[in-house]
Length: 52
Image 1 (cartoon, rainbow, N blue to C red):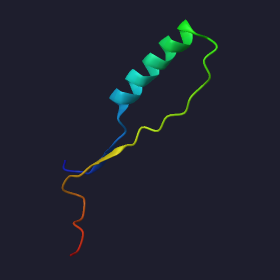
Image 2 (cartoon, rainbow, N blue to C red):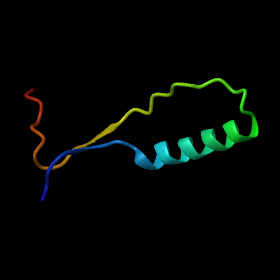
Image 3 (spheres, one colour):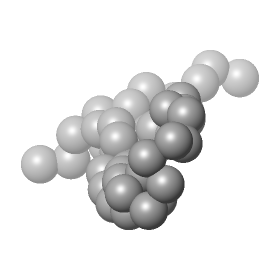
């Protein structure tokens, strides 16, 4: 199938979660953080071309 999809960057999210968890274990006083990991569009055959 040649369907366009969104890559939610689960590899980056997983590594970041693991690092954050280890940091919080080392220092329980650390404040919670918010991070935005921008998803990426994986363009395949079902994505329409932009008209010129």
